[in-house]
Image 1 (tube, helix red, strand yellow):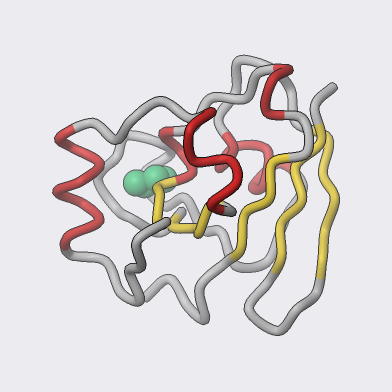
Image 2: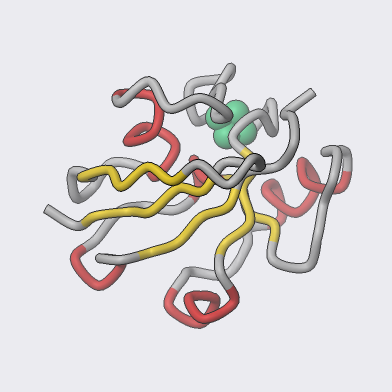
Length: 106
Ligand code: FES
């Protein structure tokens, strides 16, 4: 299974095995990762799954949809590499993906 490295705002690292076909958000929630909420269950309507994708991985991800871009517009602490992790589907090519988490989701 691909592994995803989540780095919390305080620097704590969590290496999580993620099932292919599920979202990065779901992998985090399934593993009770602090810092990812996923309130809407992945419907792209809450932005509580916000994370910063390491720039080295940017080109390996599908581009943001219009819905994701709109939700990120209203999210806190948005940066150039912000993504909604519920919109990133795990696949083998993403093994080693690094996602940093914002200070808070609210
Ligand atoms: S889980 Fe709600 S937008 Fe991602």
